[in-house]
Length: 283
Image 1 (tube, rainbow, N blue to C red):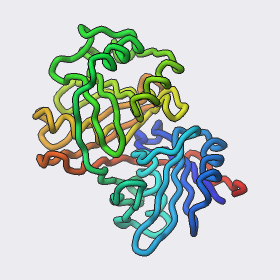
Image 2 (tube, helix red, strand yellow; image 1 turned 60 degrees about the horizontal axis):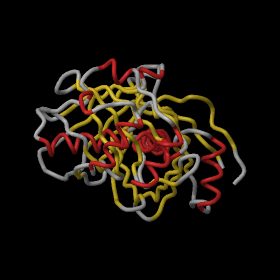
Image 3 (cartoon, rainbow, N blue to C red; image 1 turned 30 degrees about the horizontal axis):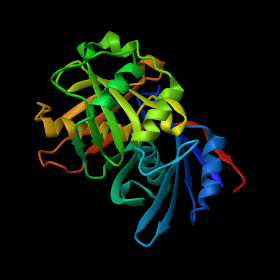
Image 4 (cartoon, rainbow, N blue to C red; image 1 turned 90 degrees about the vertical axis):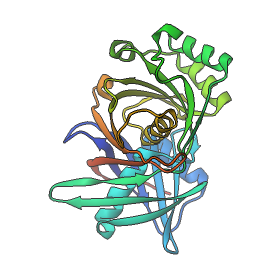
């Protein structure tokens, strides 16, 4: 089994969120994929095998399988473009059929995916109180223009929009308490964001559910956030840019396109770069 090491949503030759990418003739058993993901150690590894006119795809964090992972999808799209040539690839993930358009040329390497359908809803008051306590926040720290919400784009993400950049930069939390809350409520990530302008956001994404303190770039959370902004009537003018990972020293950039149709898929684009040579592992 060959694992490619690709960083998705890179900013030039820097940053991006690493993903393990395994393209094979048929998917291994889930226990094998989980073992490989734990050994690779990135926030997610993606496994893909051709089935008919599509690719069957599954995503594994070091400690758990997730139904959808945006940065691993960008990494997979880039890898498929390198293997098969630039194209639109159909992906059958656990609960949806999506597409990823991979590109590779002298001018760049990367991909764009269409997320699963999006939706959003309010946060229960007790859950919000617990989440604020987790991050040492109060209601006064929140941006009233973007109320706390559970946003879905292939998985649930708790959105907490902050009033200022410094509060986001200072983010800290207790990992075990975060894992307990995420497991109980089914939160894939906690999506803490700051709107510098209507179209430029800064984000931090703790991922304790998967055994990861923080992701430097999170495509699924970006899609969920964009769907929520559309639900709010936010003046996005059709797109937003999300800067993530800067506070980790891993600069990442996500380009997000938003249509006006409520609940529709979100298109997320990012560059990719190879971290190191492919690694052979025993299945």
